[in-house]
Length: 233
Image (tube, rainbow, N blue to C red; front, side):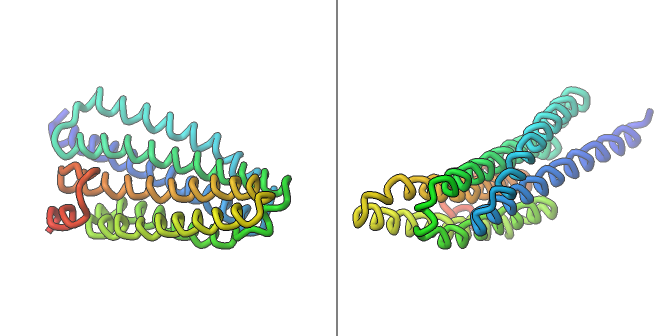
């Protein structure tokens, strides 16, 4: 078998792995969409669908991770190919954790529906933050498909919007709890929901950083944004 044939087979396997990662990303996107629907309409049906999808996400993560380990063992990739496989492994871990956060959102929505009082609290503000976080995931998957470092940097900037929404919402909840201690329990439900949304944004940011690592070969996880921007010029 010629080296060219081997290289062609390896490229095909990498493309297949990439497609599997994108499939997992699409599944997690669907989870988050359903979690937002559950929150927006206080829908027990949508919340239940999120939890059903969790099992599929977990199974896919394990399967893809095994495929990547097998790929490394058989092909022993080096340089950029090795970075690609390692980045894929970290991306699927972040996607699985986003799925966990969507499931956490669904469970908190169920708790809110059962308790009732939280409906009178500012849950609408959370929908805005949730849409922002979902948008970050969509952009991260698109940037990954195109290996677009510029788009990845934009995601790092936009994650600050999610963080600011979270901080503002927490301040608002504290005000509600101080004014009426009876809202404390319900407010905590919403606080955990808000934290789950913030974490989805954080994991999308992690994916963006992995794109930069993959393309540029630079670990930018703890670098300042200005430093990251200058490193890809």
